Length: 302
Image 1 (cartoon, rainbow, N blue to C red):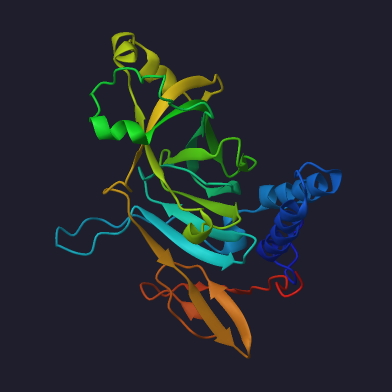
Image 2: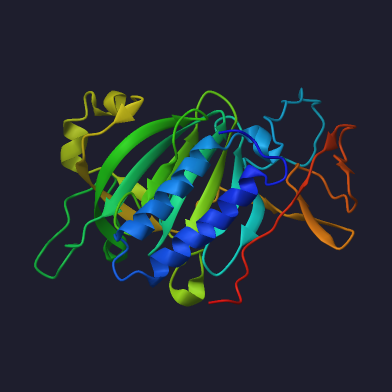
């Protein structure tokens, strides 16, 4: 897709995301032709986006000085925009970093890799969860009695690797709604669009999960681990998930830099940039960062 400097691709994506998901909200079932066409346009735009469109690049690893210092986060989130219809931002993952298994209640989403490679494991909860007449299997290690209330039967839909040349990974309220994201073979970054945004007040809080192993699986686990490490796993299989608090080893830094110049709003997504001028420089280097005007559709005409 040819680049248009007057209308940056990220701005086009923001506008199309608003139009697409606003239409999805007003649609009775979300499958009419107009909504499908708008969603196809959005997928086409998102497929074309690259790291250069957001002026980001993999961070160079710094040699260890041996001195105590502030530990850099495994995950950084760079906020781009949020409306009542959708949110959009960029996740930066360090080498070996992982975003734990989590859900997106009643939400749609798109994930597009900008650089590097990520492995995405997608799950869905099964509607027929535990009832008074059903008993869960025996797990290894065993669960505490109170933990059974946080058990969920689920399906592992797929395990797929995505690179910057891949199309977006899609999720819906009913399909691939839970996923775990792992950086593969180095650092990675991806554009993340969620519609509507997380909002605990509206029942859209983020929940974390742990994949459990049953005793039976343990006894027949001779090669299953090796199979799950493959680049792509399309066969669906039933599994059990345990809802857990946010893992202690998962933490991220949220960044949003607003730059106002001549009554226009600019956003710089460069890490460590806190400039408030037309041009900005990373506080840790002499490399200038390019910025762009972010113009979102008006939310007044509902």
